[in-house]
Amino acid sequence: MASLARLKIGKPGTGRVIGDKFVGRAIRIYLPLLALLVVTLFPFYWMAVTSFKSASELFDFSVSPLWVREPTLAWYQHLFTQTNFPHWAFNTAVVATISTLISLFCSILAGYSLARLRYRGADSIGWGIFVTYLVPPTLLFLPLTFVIRELHLFNNLWALILTYPTFLIPFCTWMLMGFFKGIPRELEEAALVDGATRIQAMVRIAIPLALPGILAAALFAFTLSWNEFLYALIFMNDSLVKTIPVGVTQELIHGDEFFWGELMAAALLGSVPVAVLYSFFVDYFVAGMTAGAVKG
Image (cartoon, rainbow, N blue to C red; front, side):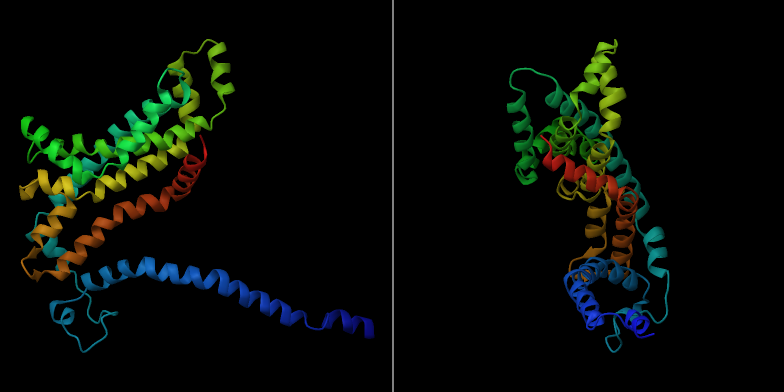
């Protein structure tokens, strides 16, 4: 009976050790994660709360700004009926999608060529492409403005579709180079021995194996295109062809007058597509970024 009691009670101090480990784990892991989660999600919460407040509640400083007493959809209704937000959203989606597809097509071909094909100057070209990405857009928009003017593309979505790949292709190419270098050459060599062409080996072997990296590059390109502001501000003056970042900041801010309800509603709706994409493909994005950073 005594031995059975000792087994049930356990060793002296075991509970204290387990409690100390739990407290230490909470301090080292859970508290920093909780702080990071609050800092990350609070802007979205603030946008959502503000967008559902009425005008009277929005400027009532006698109550807590963190809660909504009487939710309303008036700001969303005004955004969709009294502004050109539907046009801005459509323009942003079209530009981001087409720019991403163009950039991926060029980056896959360039990344595979620089990673797999042996020819003189491949390494120098690879470094040159990456250095091109480091050039800030503030130095490129002046010459690009002259190009767009000569092509008569002002207030045309093609102005953005053609200029966005100038900063998307270099980074996507560099990232995909690391992924293609991580694929064993023996797989493609075996396909070439079996009679496949280089194009067939790339399409049927290299690209499927590099799919996580391609999806990571696609997310990166789409996010940059969706949130790009400088080129859209310079090339788009007509309200109907503006994108969300430019339209919201120009049409919903008049001098020192801020339309906070519409601003927060537009900001929240503009963040949803990118957030949804990352929620579905976050594993591929992390795998692509980490693999592209260490390979090659």
